[in-house]
Image (cartoon, rainbow, N blue to C red; front, side, top):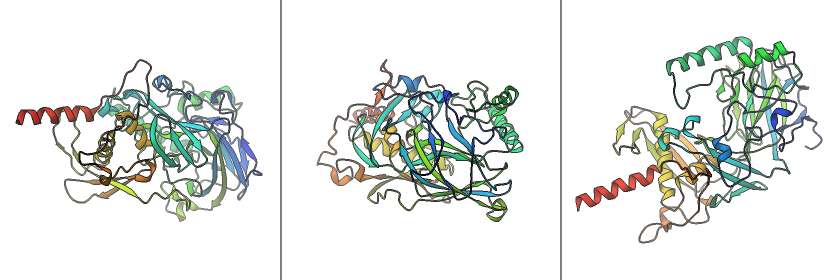
Length: 440
């Protein structure tokens, strides 16, 4: 594996915006940084997704101050010989390793205005957990009592868009923005020239066009991109559509581990590292594979946590700030949120803080499934929590006669000014206690 050539060399301890072979926008005018033959193994160095903005520290001021115009410094693009528009490229993910100089990663919760599935629910304030890597395992000083094997994968892997596809992305996403003026968090991110970066020597007029038109890397799209699929991991394959000659594949946003949903937006264990790949071309693959979006084959070597505690969620909001029960209609997102919130509340009852459980469920290898989307009015989702990642029995069998022992697990890294998210579970307990006293 080590004999495979390194096509992009990255120093994870230096800012990404000073290094060659990186890019943070999608645009067809970005040329291939290197080209590979079909069947050739090659390695690519990858910076962590913020390009060096987040530090191994015990506060979350860096997360609070992150500049989201300087994110997703992807490595590439890498051209594949023989790939033409209409083909598909099969990319095999052969290995991912962290840098010896950076044997750690992090999970973050952003401020409310920057997004995340529960940004509005918790009125989120910046929080962070640092995870230390020990081979394939990880643990965090900010979330004690937990250790697990990572499902290591690239959060972003995609082929380059054509100009026609780029124009369509920009048009439809701008229409969405126009429908929701002033939304916080934003419903989409329009092209932003500020801090657009391509680590190649390009003519000024070309770079200006890329900065002006280039698609932001936050969402996944038809070409792949930022899909954050945890099981697109070491040993898996992904078939990507080809829109430009050479396919021009870019990869980055490496994750040591992640749970389904990536709840906190910066919700994986973000890392810098080296990924080893191999590519082949399926001629006329978009037609032959009926390909509208990528197709992938999961890895045969992912960690297998079969002992799970499964929490159900329905499209009924039981965690509304007002304390009211709000009925939804076949809302799969609401059902998934409820499953996650039910799990969070359960773990808080063991002694973890709201910030810690938010970070943990983002980073740990949880499985979220849509169980039923047919029985009106309630969609049903489930969240499966691996029980063996904890150093105690967290199942109902682990309760004493008075319930669970509530331990002191400290706190995640939070802002140095002490600001914290709203603890909706504490508010719920207060309402329940008041209601109980009123009955008495």
